[in-house]
Image (cartoon, rainbow over all chains, first blue to last red; front, side, top):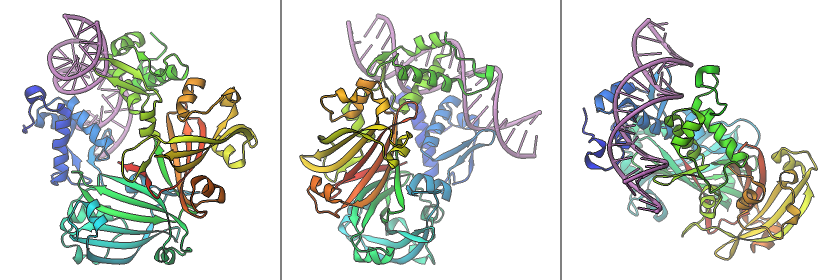
Length: 244
Length: 244
DNA sequence: CAGTGGTCTAGACCACGCC
DNA sequence: GCGTGGTCTAGACCACTGG
């Protein structure tokens, strides 16, 4: 038994939402690790003291949030930040013709810095707080297509300076090295002209229209964990959005 | 009773999905009109011959698709293409500071035409087939911000020529005049330079970076019903995308 | 074959909206 | 007070996976 009150005892929130939150806490505190098989519905129902149907509703909601993966006949697994899922969930830039692929990365710069006004506001930290800043070029089919700057609050990423390299899939790095799971993100898109530096990095002329994507990425507790500004050439690719 | 086979009788699809499809058919054929109160779960369960729980799963799925609106204590209603919902679901351009609002429109041109190659491909009609083309300027707080061209297959919109005006909210027009419900859409975004015509219409300089949104809009049967290309000034607004 | 999640059912009670 | 959708429960059977 755990400490979840019965649904009507306090009249707060539906029982299945309370269950969901308590299970998310297990993801946050690392009780359940990415890739791990979690207990079956029946076991959880017994342990928590609610019916299997209520457990199911909580697990289904978490699956809809991409936190779990359910496989009939096998069990329920904690979702992992592997390439194909990240590609589908967080990377919306698609070649005009051809298959979606994960872009390669080449690091340009990578250093500690003090948060500028805009960064600090977006990351919800103090002006001038310590951050890590990563600048890289991403290529699709060898052609440079994105120049992006990633800003991370140093507090959430202790020991970052000890890294010998920054991998292509940084969300897997956040997960494995700091136990930080990126659960959602919001992106603001604008059209801007390429700066001289943009142009040099991307091999285009300065002033070329670029798609600027400003992403805030959130952890499981809805804290902003990463700020990322990507400037993209969209002559042979586009950003895909589905409205449902 | 209707003609839905029991779940295992033919072993095709889950019962609740068959129920969902049969209920969507009632939306397509107009048995249930936008805004209408549909029968209660209990009545539908009796009529169709399945349990209330199965009806509920079908209705919940349709609600998730924005086809229905459920209100505790009142009943379940067919969703209407009213401004606030359309604004939230299909209009993703937001002022950098301030509230989301529905943009005003001013029609520039509006005439029949023959589909060009790209239009025909996107609309899945023959090259040179008859279409209607609407060109308009949209303003946010009086300032021109979008120039857009809407292309409609003439076959799906008989009597279009009899219209005396094209309203701001065209999705409500499609629904009321032709019974066409827009259920989903997909958008491709690129950064482009403003043409001379764009610049004149938007009051910017030619070459100014614009966000170009190419939307395909689908009816309830997943047919492409509308093609829309919007070129947007993003100096004081941005396109908002949520990744979950 | 046993165990898992997926579906379907039936019935209870709660929260809300309206009369 | 009545009818609605929302939640919770309990139990049955099915479909898939793995040993």
